[in-house]
Length: 376
Image (cartoon, rainbow, N blue to C red; front, side, top):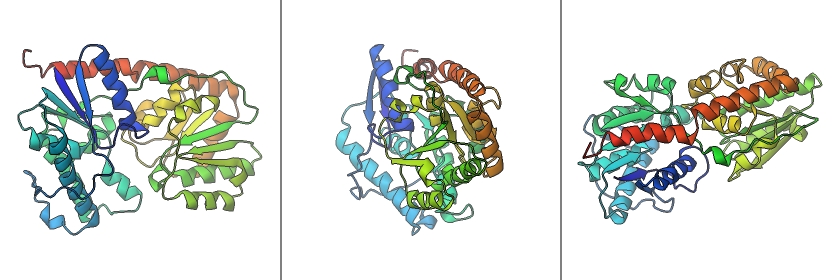
């Protein structure tokens, strides 16, 4: 059975789907499956020129909005690149981005398509202040979910909460499957260590949706109380200058290290104590599972897939979104009590190994793939 894994970002990109799928593919190929990866290189821009049409809505009324125009052009580019590069046929295509899924079904209409929706582009843009919920860009992007439902043979998403979110935009939400992201457990090695000063770490793109401003205010509250810490921020993004300026304003710049982009943060993470990310929305929140596999205690917000990964007080702590006082209290509790922190991290590791190991996800996907075998 020949299967194509169709990504949007190239597989060498760090984080989330782009780093997960190659490990998944390796597991399948070692077991005798025939799988290949495909993605759109970043250098391919403005190449495609074919007309784009959808069967469930008319996108033309949204034309002229930069977000929509860029999205449509990217679909055209993906069509151009796919026609140029793919010359063979496949028994099944598994797409991991709406553009990849829509293009693959357009060019290979007789090939079964599984579509995993990993995140919500419109929510990210809204939280990052780029679009409004009542604007044309939001309407265009949410209309794509119904189009995907129409075109894909199977829709899958990564958490029950995100399935619930999608239910507002599709006709048969009960048919959406849920398979969480999986992680190659061999990449993560918890390290026994004793830090005299609690080491806090966050790994993400530096954008408003991640709530890092709330984290800096919470850390300033820790310092005001005389509680020592070091905050390590791994990642880069458009609001890095603002966050650095805020850290200086709050008097915690000397306690905060901005690392910028890092290719393999999992090599670094096991030497810290607490992973914290006060996101304002997450479809799944892959980095929490990765942090748990590194042996860290977890602190997150009660949103989306984070709240499905963390059971409050059992394998981590949950706080409301944008609640500085609650986040500061949670950090004080977990950072100030090494035994409590160890207990949380131990349970978090056990749950991550059980629920999010690559072995389990491969088993779930294998069952889905086999249902589309021609000889089944």
